[in-house]
Amino acid sequence: MDFFHGKEALTAMEWILRGSVSFAFLLIIAKFMGQRSISQLRLLDFIVALTLGNIIAHPLSDQKIGLQGSFITTATLTILYIAGTWLSLKCPRFNRFLHPEPITLIQNGQIQFHHLAKARISADFLFSELRKEKVEDIQKVSLALWEPGGIVSVFMDTPYQPVTPADLDLKTQPFVITRPIIVDGQIEMALLQEMGKDLDWLEEQIAGASADIPDVMLATISDNAVVQVMKKHAK
Image (cartoon, rainbow, N blue to C red; front, side, top):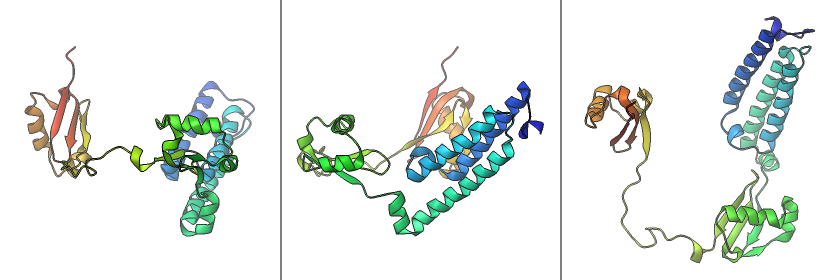
């Protein structure tokens, strides 16, 4: 455990061990913090991510700095992050501080220029975001909002929204989603149990496609228990 403490010099193996342990530690911390901190960086997420990166980076580049202090500080900040997230759910005032109300950028086809300055974005940036949403005419936009997460939500005016089967009073089939049940010959047993099926049933379905489970590259199962099979290409 000499690599864990600060030293005048580290061997190549000690540097590798220090990096590996830090990587594993950060994986555990990220898992503990939850999906939100990974999927989107809001104010609290950004502060924690920036701070944690700096804390771990120093002992990974300076052999005189031990890992113990960095790990303790990281764990402390993680606890504070979770506490802050919990507090934002329980205290509306604190939640509004962390996640302010969205800013109206466009209303009824008109750009709210004073709100652009409040959001600290330019008109060019706004039009760039509109192009990403396939909006070619700003007059067709009923509402555009600058969200706390740093994205623009665009709502088209009613005449320019896509027609849906409900608008035409058409009958539709129930929504069905497919999920992978076999990937490269490996069975997702948890999904199989969730579907209320057993291994014998799955083997029967695969046999119906003239394949064996080890020969399956991908097999998907739908909510109505329909299995589709893609076999591996022969070498």
